[in-house]
Image (cartoon, rainbow, N blue to C red; front, side):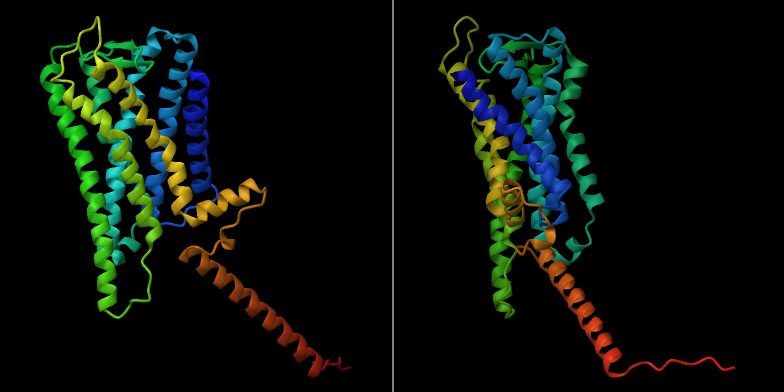
Length: 342
């Protein structure tokens, strides 16, 4: 029963949700948000999809066989992509919240931000996420063992170099970005409220703030904070709680298992967050489920699609008027035919 629950609650939602987000955003342009926000959403989906393939799938195989059955080499290699994607998601969400604040503070400048620039920022986030894999490779690449608590090959940090490096790295690479995510999320709501007050004072009370992008970023960051907070507490408190290898206590066994399991919520929840906050993505899902072809011009929930739709209607209306006027002119005023002179 536990294997079926793992398959239905972890493996299938991870793969289907992330692949749907990527197809909808890249091929069908179903996210009518700012280019920076859409680019961050795509990179987060790629990170979650890689994490599903390198963490969820091997964990499911280990759960079925009741042990690690993929060989010693893959056990030593598994921590590299897993830690890369976990850190990458953290830095990407941190960059997404920060960029959304800049979009609210400098809306005119944000219009000139290109998609190429967004990919460069995301590439910088991936470079920062390479810290732990590089440290694993330099210090001891074979320092990994199968952990029955989470059915995953964890790094053991058994080298003496990790005694000083691990706490410092965890504070700088792990704790500070999470604090930045929390502060930028709170400041994003404050900045949105301040923008509304400025518009009311300027006499533009009827103009609506683009809440789709704000709610998408805020809910994505909130789900990340809630899902990764227990495991962050574990890594902080694990240095002060004694661990007996022969008999693990409640903190190192039950709490660690629950804390790691809650991190899967961040991967699964993004699909539902986007379905709730992004109208165009919700319409794409509705038309896909009902086997209808999706067209961005049919969506009226965003400014981009409505502008395209209005321009399309105006051009077709103009062409029909020109055709009618030319037809009437030809009927009412026949064009004289010049006869050839001898």
